[in-house]
Amino acid sequence: MQTSLWRSRKVLVWLDERLALTELLEYARHKTVPEHKHSFWYYWGGISMFFFLIQVFTGVLLMVYYRPGAESYESVREITYDIRFGWLIRSAHSWSANLMVLAVFIHMFSVFFMKAYRKPREFGWWSGLALLALTMTFGFSGYLLPMDELAYFATKVGLELPASLPLVGKFINDVVRGGPEVGSVTIQRFFALHVVVLPLIFIPVLAFHLWLVQKHGNALPPSEEQKPIAERRSIPFFPDFFSKDLAMWLVALNVLAILASLYPWQLGPQADPLAPAPAGIHPEWYFMSQFQLLKLFGRWFPGVTGEVLGLVFFTLILLLWAIVPLYDTGTAAGRRAKVATWFGITVLALLIVTTIWGYWEVL
Amino acid sequence: MSEFVKEQEAIEQETVMRRTFIRLGIGAMATGYAAAIGYPIYAYLSTPAKRAAEAGSITEVRLEGAAKLPAGSAMVFKFGHKPALLIHHRDGRWVAMDAVCTHLGCTVQYETDNNRVFCACHGGVYDAVTGENISGPPPKPLSVYRVEVKDANVVVAKS
Ligand code: HEM
Ligand code: FES
Image 1 (cartoon, rainbow over the protein chains, first blue to last red):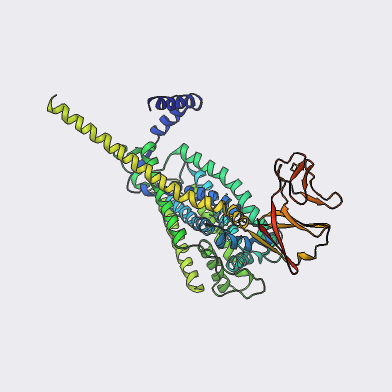
Image 2: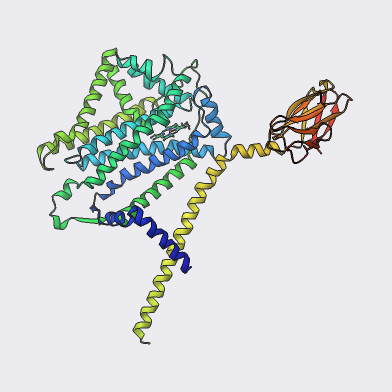
């Protein structure tokens, strides 16, 4: 006992001399995180990252048996019904994908309402938006891979809308879909996107995002900013905040385990391009809002006009959303700050209302 | 010893016990999670190996229409997941044996002209009737199976 303890000490010292572990630990101890009644929202970035790690882990496991292209449905059928616990791995990947999107959305809105995008954190906001876009692209490309009925029609419809636009349409047809129809050619390129291109872009952007968070620390929400410095409280990052982070991850893991095992992800019948679309075909919930908006514009302004207007409207909101750090720069009590907050509330409301409306119409 | 010191020692004892207890609890929980995650992953990754082992545990193969095999020739068939050799000798005898060389696992072949089983990888030679290793590097004989010709079919079984 005594000697083994001594030996492990020696190993630690050996490592420390070379990797400066003590320095790192000291640093982590001195780093602090503000503590106040909105602290709960600081965990959502970490939760998003946790689900991403789960995606990488379960995704690699799926790749062991998944075969893209013409055999994709058959291989997912094998994963779901033949391979031991394959259903669980697949279910965990699918559920965690949805939880990740949800966590990223919550994270973004909490950052927005805490006004954490203000100087010097503008690039944190922009890199975060890039991560959201990448996450949604992950979801869109992954959804096609099993090539069951739902996957086929969701992708078909999802690409059909922008494909009817000038210019964008040609790009979608020639490059994204690889032809006029969604088929094994499409699966193969979505697969390359899903498992190689997106992770290759996502990971460095995430690293940049984390580096900025580390550099600037957690932003204070306006309500805390107004307090005198003496009244503000904070806790050390290590071990206090870190152990709470871990606890959150454990909660996330348990939620995922419950959902994935009690509500196994289903595999529909194989996609048949000649069969009529089943009733109530709709995109994943995180695309529902855009889907419904485009549908509404199409209803109000028949023809291509509606789609173009819908897309212009959508792009405009996205643009305003992206440049909010350039607009809302002053104090939290200022007029601009109030406008930004109302803009955020409007966007959130629009997102929720159109999503519910969309489901109302298809279900 | 004063009451005070005794009390302090008791408190200390209690803290140590509590700490050990918490450590054990966390350790047990971590082990539980590791097992609950590790076992499904192991089972998932090892499914093909398990299926192959199951396929390999068969004791009999029925070769439909194999009785047509001309005398003085041989065919390769799958016994479980491994290749095996069915030889119809010129004298009418039927022999079946493993086709996996006992040296480094190459698939062997029947040579009609030399009436022997030959391994091209390192020149191993086996007896075409008994499976005996005759020359070259193979350390062990090829195991032979029981063969029964039933009408047009041939049934090969582990002996
Ligand atoms: C390096 C990371 C990843 C790898 C290697 C990976 C790999 C895979 C593979 C092989 C499949 C096909 C098997 C199947 O359909 O069940 C798949 C499906 C899928 N992926 Fe990923 N993935 C990764 C990250 C992500 C992320 C970040 C998301 C979303 C946030 C995501 C969402 C999906 C979805 C929704 C499916 C369809 C699931 C289904 O219906 O079966 N993936 N992924
Ligand atoms: S493997 Fe057959 S002789 Fe070496």
